[in-house]
Image (tube, rainbow, N blue to C red; front, side, top):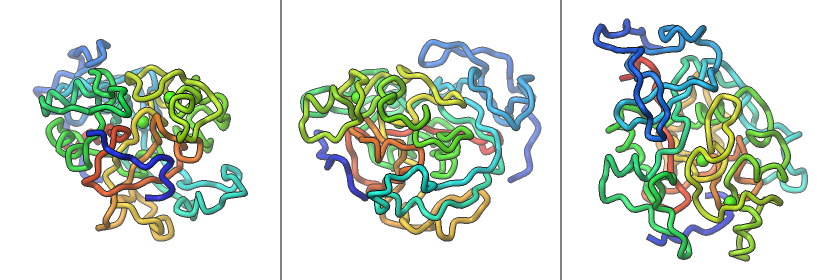
Length: 316
Ligand SMILES: [Ca+2]
Ligand SMILES: [Ca+2]
């Protein structure tokens, strides 16, 4: 709802049960991207897989969700300071960061598995065969490995229900994006380095469309990129910044940080808009940040908005 970089006209802790007897933790599945990984089953954590303790990330390892063949990385439990600290703001524009205040302690009490990639068109079409992400100004965003976009919040949630997973909360999303750091971006603080790490609004997009605000960088891609083309963040997640915006589970409220609970905040009880995170291929350096909060009406769709999912080991 806040200062959209581009007006989007649509071209189109509970008790943990034991690992079930029928689970096959060592069975390998080939993911939708052609990588082999262990098969996810309820209750599975790094320690049950023999990887090591549950309180650390394993950025080079993943499980495969048998429902949609998505790759999932472990996000350990922990705490962080949510919001934007003064040293990460543009002092000329404090209003851009108003809803990211106050910076506050958040504790994620349970580790969870998070999709390494945005859900793709190919995956979404396993759920809804007629899905078409459409195009933007003549450039298609509907290729199989591109993120599924042009879908509303309910469609993202319905997919998650089908795949046995859920949308991340806004707090889980920011925690996973930061991956233990307090940098503006997943790669550090350099806007010029963005082109090596994310598909954002860049010189390629700005040269095509004069109304794009852009990073001072060139990632070479005007619209969606195939997922996983750029390096992952420190916890093994790809495209957290850029490519497609990502719907979160929460309702949006600009003042939520002033009364957010410390443990596992899940957003206001109700609202008019849902949270989106991470920026997209049409986002500038102010919106494609780890801490930026964006929102839109849940029934609204846009060719720059998609999602990724997550699952707590014992919540299904
Ligand atoms: Ca780009
Ligand atoms: Ca993204």
